[in-house]
Image (tube, rainbow, N blue to C red):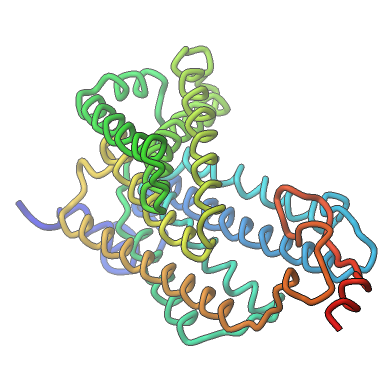
Length: 367
């Protein structure tokens, strides 16, 4: 068994301008066999970058409101709503990308959002660029290039009948049973033993995310085929997948919010990215059999690209955490003679920015 098939060597020669069926990059046989996947990659990358822009716009809106003397709810800010609209467009683009590219390729491209957010904050929020950010960005970009280059090239037009066959295949049934057992064990420790370690919470998120990704891929593919004239929306499996997608996504958000409440975002984001990407790749391999005909070298280089992306995200998140720890601050609750009338924004449970009241009597008593 050869490490790389002859046909794949020919495809590479074409893609890099070598001798083959074409003479230019992105032309001939390579482009004809990869153009659908290439569109999905570009759509996913652009959508994740749009999400990073939207998050920074929302953060900028919160900072502007915090500097105003007159209290104003954040949902009355036009800038905040602009960020929400961009976030919605980015998520829709991500959803659509699953209809054109493999799960194993779209899911790890979430690193584009992390690196984009880091560099946008440097340009517009005046954050400090550090050597770790540059190294993390370089590793992430290199890993993304390897992901795109060595991702599995499988047909993305999934019919409802194909999805039905995948649902009753024995690899997926075994995978589902194991996932249910592991999830129940984690849920037992979470509910009965009150163990709320970040790994337990994010593992439950990842297990639910694998089902969400499977359903999203199926729904997006069937909608894409229906738009092209091959109606798939009349099959019951389409609506079963929609229910699975919404239900698993709702519980996934619940546990992710719990993790964000208990731990810092700089800790949750990289760990969740690694767990989510790993579970998505595994679900794509088992359910959609995306690496079934892939060469050994392609699989190795793809996994190496994932590793580089994971390391890059961890480096960027670690630098953000260090920068936050070095910023001096005053705990408003410990200022003599002052007390809080409300929570300091941004706060997801409140729409107003808290303030301080003067307490002349307490100041006098202390003097």
